[in-house]
Amino acid sequence: MRGQQEIIGMVIIVIMISIGFLFFAKFAIDSETDKSVFVRKGLAYSTMSAILNTEVECRTKAMSMGEQILEDCLIMAGGDSNTCDSELDACELFVDKSSKMLDETVLQWGKHYELRVYKTSVGSDPELFYQIKSKDCMRSRDYDSSGMFSLNLGEGNNLLAQTMLIICD
Amino acid sequence: MILTKNFRQRGARVYTKAQMQMMESLVTMFIFFILVVFGIIFFFKYQQISLQEQETEMLAQQAIDISLTALFLSELYCSNGESESVDNCMDIQKLRGIEQFIDSHKQDYYFDMFGYSGIYVHQIYPEKRNWTVYEQVKTVTLENGEKVPADKEPTFFVITLRNNLGLNSSNQTVYGEFGYGYIHVEAYS
Image (tube, rainbow over the protein chains, first blue to last red):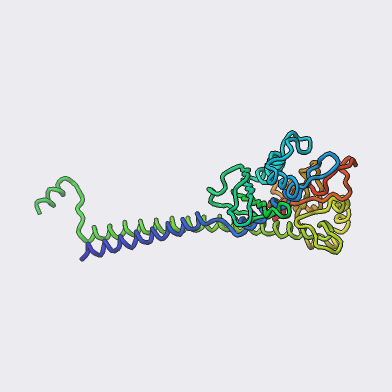
């Protein structure tokens, strides 16, 4: 009887210590706050929107990163090999400018990014066209995306460009 | 009896069964109290860290609120006549004169809105430029009487900067209405 009582006592102590560890693990692992999620999500959205709205100076005119450079890149698969005297085609220019912009902001603030450009036509699945990244964000535990930004690639061709920025810690 | 006698002869101490049980209880209680003390230390340490985290979080929340207020400030955002304004955008033309204006109305209007904080706008593309929109630094006095800035929490948001005038900082013509930049807010505790 006494032996049984001691075993029961031991079991209770082990259970209590296990519960303590579970609580500790829960607080230690689940430390991400609503604030950091909000900041990442907001940052991803505003960054994607700003990149697409930015206009690149091109001799005596301006070319929008989204509606012109990205459109040229997706429709003509690069098009002019010397877009805006840059010795780069439209796709390379988009990648060059957007990666510089992301490096000087998101990356400098200690976060990583993954910018994806999809080409979609009606009735077919989106095809990943370009990917610029500082880290494989989808493998990270804490990441958020801007959501899809859609651009109509001209009339009549039923083509759509979709861009998405993923930001991770 | 023989064993006890032998022990006594060698000078060894012999405990009775009741003494053994009391010692066992004492050791158990000692270990139990050590565990309790460890638990209390762990709990207070955790509470301390948790309080510090909460303070940082509140400061960050304050910085986010200030960022959002600044983003939608009619003195700065990109209005479009009667049509919808441009998302996450600030007007460079407005930014040029805002610091002086805000400075002259800091105490009577803007301090209630932004409190102890700093709002800075930085342009990255097409050229690097900086503007200070608002700045009210909170200082704390150290034991040696030295005044230093209080703890602060920075928050960043990427924005588009509209240049309607088509002129850069050296008053040369630039082509491209929308530039790329960010707003940097520092909230003081």
